[in-house]
Length: 308
Image (tube, rainbow, N blue to C red; front, top):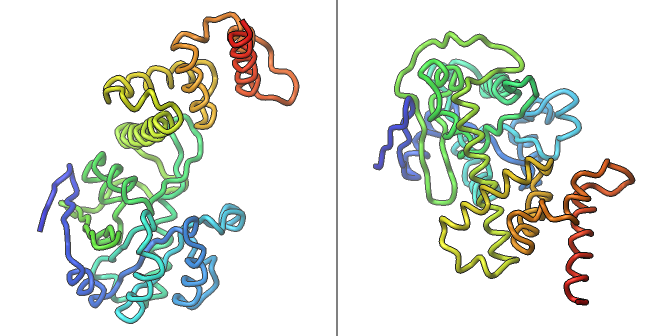
């Protein structure tokens, strides 16, 4: 068994037999993504035996509006695990497995689900440091492990709550995450919940890394010259030009990708060229976005070069 200790959690590889033994102990659930598998809600309803609002991670109006993309909590037993493995856990990024602490076996499966869902909801709705509401994707193993590795013992204990272990169950690769120190957390229960500066920094760094990877893939697909670039050059280009894009007010992924393409075609300082400055400094008028206007101006500039 491979074990890795990260800060205040331990992540260990486990085999399928260990997971089956865990299921036999009771108190096991999966938190499954309906956004990538439309069978998840019906499976939750049929297995849990009550209406979907009591299995859905998102609640109230948010839950009703986003029911089709909300994760759902499903009770796992020895009888239904083969079906869940086949129908849900075969997909990449389908969700995570959960086992409750031993003392939760004093509750019925329905009571366990209710208590666990309440706890997970507490850590799903967050208030950012600038006061904005954020949803934390606890069903994403990468998000979960990144958060835990940036947390103190007290913070880890608060997030785990009644949970003994989180389990990554993708294909034949299984890993269990447990806390190294079990203690009563001093962090108050509240809605929305709050994270520390270190936790936010870790999540933002992870998100930025994912964005940069997506930008690099796009450039290598649509701008073949970047295929021969050293990794360091490509990373530096994406990092620098993403910052320039953000400084110019382009923050969403679609606009940033277009900005990176323009930077390749016209050069990294193209925003200082007259045709670009005219668009970037103009007041917003009409229905077209600033990026749509910038892209059109770029096409016009290319037409001029061709006609010369």
